[in-house]
Image (cartoon, rainbow, N blue to C red; front, top):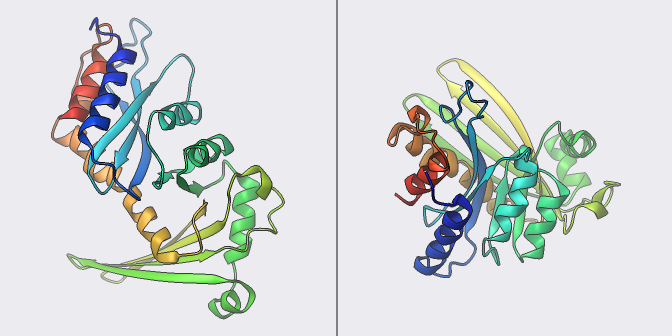
Length: 260
């Protein structure tokens, strides 16, 4: 409870750097997680929210920052990125981190980004939807596109994912504000469970070259932080049930769980 969480996180980052090999082209998902019972209404203490960085291939936590003092994930993500060695890596972030400051920080550190685009970037979302809102024949006729597809079948559920990418991004009037923006991407997921069929589309921007397979691998790897880190913290370590609230203990125990 008495250890400075800032010093502890710095030591954690230094330890990770010392034990990890210098990996090339690692995919680094960034995502936040709230420790639901770490807050205390009686004392006005809000629940702790951590932003984590995950090494998808090496399956290790690379670093984490906690949001406090009015900071949200938008402000915290660039701070977390600054302590990571990102050269040659692909950083993936959900729509909550789709901001110019995040893209700029990744490129500044010689990495690549794949950012999900949703309604918090309405003009960008509308433009990408317009780009991909055409038939398959029109896509190949009108755009320089690349395509990649995967299939999964498990317990009666069939899921196909189609990845479309194009490097024709110059028509977007705000392109210059997004550093090294080279790619628009779309993922169309079709799920079949018995007679039920659902289709979902998601949209992305990226600094990658026009390679749908590489883009698809980055997008799919992003969910590793949910399945391999956050799910384990909740189910194995029962993090959301922890009522530890004194001093800095919630922040430091969160780091200890991630080390484990």
